[in-house]
Amino acid sequence: MLTMKRLLICTDLDRTLLPNGIQPESPAARPLFRKLASKPFVRLAYVSGRDFQLLREAIREFDLPEPKFMIGDVGTTIYHKPGGRWQSWPEWHEMLGGDWPGAATGELAARLAGLPGLVLQEPEKQGRFKLSYYTDPKLDSVILKNKVLSRLENCSIKVRSVFSVDEVNRVGLFDLLPETASKLAAVRFIISRSGVAPERTVYAGDSGNDLEVLTSEVKAILVANAIEAVRRQARQEAPTGTLYLAEGGFMDMNGNYAAGLLEGVVHYLPELGPVLKNDMR
Ligand SMILES: [Mg+2]
Image (cartoon, rainbow, N blue to C red):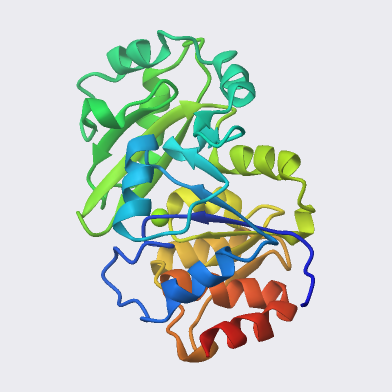
């Protein structure tokens, strides 16, 4: 049997691995992804805006393979299961707690109360390190961000904001997070502790909250169902050689969702092409 060096696949869920967007999914895509994920050399990390419960729900509902790591709440939580049971990774949460005290979300929410265009999301969507709002998806995110920042002037809590669009529910999502928390920072944390070489790590995403990873040093894949604005921005900002735009055609699939992820994995690691083709039979 062919021995392969370890591979770490980090992937966003909604509209990247999960076919819950408006575009169709190639029927072969997820079964093939499941086969790849079951190989002993593959480590899997899900990276999502979802919280722990919603992550577990997605895995059940869409019959996804069990990952080794889960990054939730847009990078503010990391879970692993050292003893076979899921638990949050204390080292990560201690790092974030340093610049985001327990009362931070309450103070930020009070400062932003009544700001036109921002509607607080449901309590279950809020987190220890995340304050989340709904917005108009057509809103100019730069103007919104500036309005928010001006309300937070002289505030000791250092925040970063992430804007993305849920195209199915036609709603904008605006998250405030600790400055040091992000999908990228959490992915880097996992890479550094996974035992997998950085050059054997890939990341797949589709939307605004993936852009930071899509345009970083991490080998990234933008699935074909991504909207044009994200595609354009990713292409403009990514360093040479670390962004692959899935376009379909790989193994007769359309490049959307899991098909795009697989297409990108084989782009970066061509030696996996024959492995996947063998699985397809
Ligand atoms: Mg997504």
